[in-house]
Length: 216
View 1: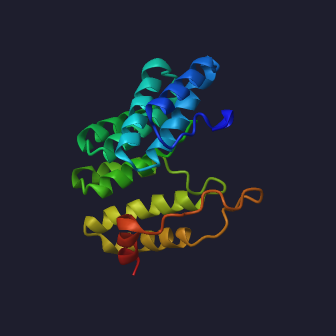
View 2 (view 1 turned 90 degrees about the vertical axis):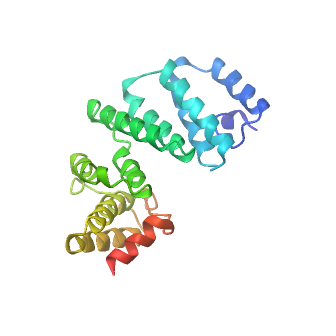
View 3 (view 1 turned 135 degrees about the horizontal axis):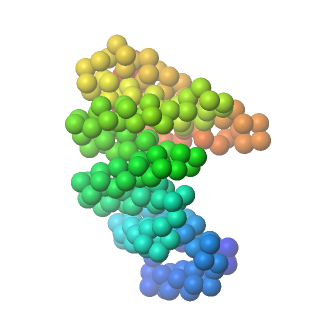
């Protein structure tokens, strides 16, 4: 593994851990939180419980040792996502709320926690949070402000559509679902230099399938 990849490991053996922390110790203190975030992300993306547990430990380490306000929302979101994957739903909900509060406190940093939180509520069918999710989506709504990524449209309208439909409001849910489906079909982002950034790649699973049924 090259020097450039030491913080992008996709396994977490004892040797992996030792190598990562040896590099981390030698790195600039101002960069360490970034390395922890990136490594946690790559371990989480493996979708393996051992690696997700390690990602959770790294997120906790970053929160404990490098609690910079600018990174808090993203770190809390990472922690919440890991807890969710590990089946700790109640704990994940609590940490998602901390992530949203961190977004409010540093409004110029927008890691889109509202979408991961909304998807979490939909995944676990937490109907008591439906109203709160809709309010949060509107609170952090950037639709209409410049070029909006297809993925932003997809989750903004998609989460609204599914929740409204579950609440029995198909009339309002259907056009939102159709707008989400249209966003999922876009082949270019709108950015001339980065035409593929922010496209919707995951058109499968419960979320997508439920959107299809609402849009019809």
